[in-house]
Length: 324
Ligand code: AHR
Image (cartoon, rainbow, N blue to C red; front, side, top):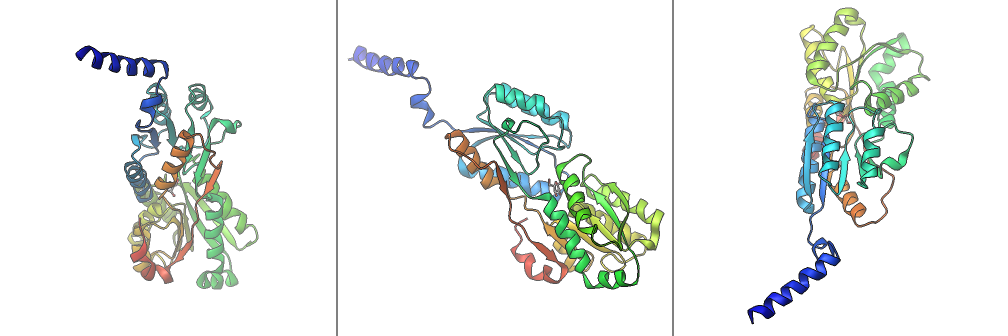
């Protein structure tokens, strides 16, 4: 009897040995390696949460790595995911360039790569399977369009120049490059609108405050508008403006990007005039693409997030509905 049981078990093992993975694949959990930019902003924290929650909901094993805003850390993380033979690699690239070698290594190891939130600048687009996230150029355009049509700013433009200071995101990152490009594209047709200073605030509150202090020192009351590439830098700058004895939202009109809760609070307090939405809630979309890729199903090369624009007037009404 014992021998019979042993023989049956051996036969199953033998079959499994010749058909590797066949019987086990069904229950095998997908392993996703994700390299995150860091924790530089309210947006990023919400993005990380969305990815972790969605992985848990979908039963995907997530190997998560925080690069602390450094490209070399992301490259190390991706190499370690390759060494661990994860099923899929996803990442949000801190900067656009310099990814070819590591992406080629992933391709050689037959591990598909999905870009989440930010794009890479590589010639060979077979190095990644899908890119999901916002249209950052369009966000820049939306910020400029709102500004040109904002009645107090229109009044200023009727009398003379509108002096803008710009807080850029991380140097070399897709959102910093694209948001600048989209904003300037619209301003080309509005000659009264002049960007008098532009510097990086690295997407953080602390840097946003520090750079705004320098802008105020150099230009003082000449500044009519602040355009910040994200809400966190705008929130830092608001503090600098108040400390300089000026009224943010009134003496300096402020438009920024993301639409995080902190921006809504600032708008309700009358200190921020408009925020352009950039949704960080990419987790569910990412997990569904991961599952499709593993199942061999086709995934769209580009998935663009739908977003809106929230001026101060709608902030109080919209605030209770905000998810991040
Ligand atoms: O890539 C998205 C940008 O990165 C967000 O606008 C910013 O807040 C974040 O740090």
